[in-house]
Length: 78
Image (cartoon, rainbow, N blue to C red; front, side, top):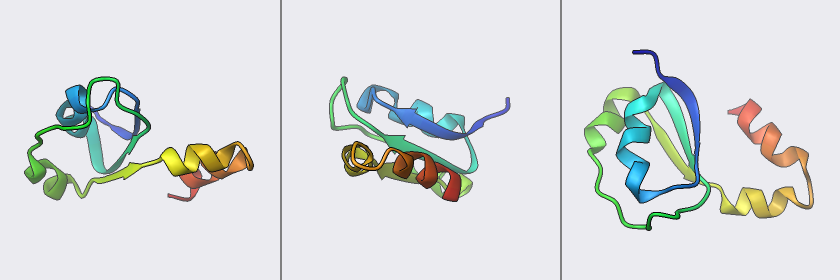
């Protein structure tokens, strides 16, 4: 099954492990919000095996209101 390079997650805890499982090697998960809670259990072995990164982007979204290209540039640069 093919995965994806980037996931923008606004659901949070309920989908954390599933999102990690869907990412390709060197994939990135951006957590935008959490409608299902802020506490989750995950298997970090998947993160090590795929060299994944997780980043909370609330500060990016807040700053993007001042600079709309900031969010777009961040995704392209990484």
